[in-house]
Figure (cartoon, rainbow, N blue to C red):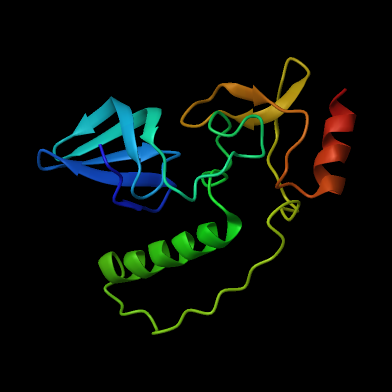
Amino acid sequence: MTVEKLVYGGDGLARQDGRVILAPYVLPGERVSVKPEREKPGLVRAATLSVLRPAELRIPAPCSVFGRCGGCHYQHAPYDYQVEAKCAILVEELRRLGKIEPPEEILVVTGEPWGYRNRVQLQIEQRRLGYREARSHKLCPIKTCPIGSPQDVSHRLAQSE
């Protein structure tokens, strides 16, 4: 399938045979191979198997557990693009769900792309610390987290050892 756009929740949207297909960790314009996981009339939630033709702006994700951890959706895109995509998603959600015409210009306040999150919800299982895997209750153990505040995440990880 070829991805049309990103939607709320981090998935890419494509249309095929009259159905909407949502798949994670993709970018607009990419040609991807997917595996259907859950289907409803007119909607398929799929797992991304491979990126056959990557978008020009795709970058390597800096986090070693990106795509497995359920925390981040857009590390495979440059930060400026992530901000633009989130703004476009907001505009679409205001129109589609809120029936509100958004202002002509949406002022966006951004911070540092890494180490900004002051609150994280880490899970503990058998003395291992991590996040939940995407769409799962399974633990994704971590040693570091590039979006978490270095003081917060390092402190919590040190406490668990």
